[in-house]
Image (tube, rainbow, N blue to C red; front, side, top):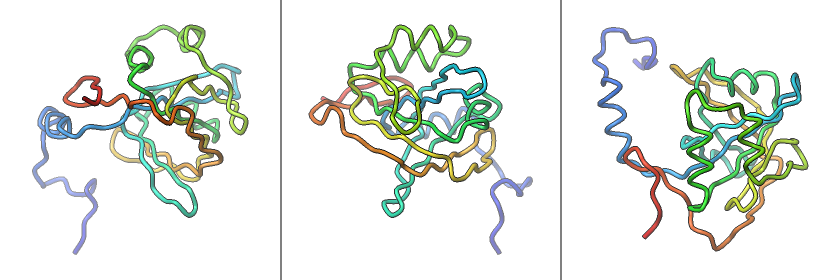
Length: 176
């Protein structure tokens, strides 16, 4: 008999600290997820390390967004969003968009070189390794996060020889 991970209340569970420490051993790429808010005509962005390819045919990606966050709120209103895969020269951008209680996204975008995606109108970071523009096809509740499954409308490699920015053991890293 299979049970849902969320339906079992008697099973032991790792503490948040144990879980964070264990999964911190996995290096991941760093991406900036962006959206143009159709309601207030402003841009929103967040740094993500939980972004991955799901399918080649059709082209699908998945990103994890904290439930009830500003990004979750905006992505509920707009099904169009974009992702910029960040290079090692984008550590400051990644850090700024990851800060809790940060300045408004308007100010962060004003200080970040970017252009608009042709398919989504979302900001794309200049000099990113690659950019992907998406349309949400499914929202999946997952604990304290929401998983967005996105159909890829456009994918462009913009800096083919550049090195990626990585996140490992709680900090940004570069390839040796």
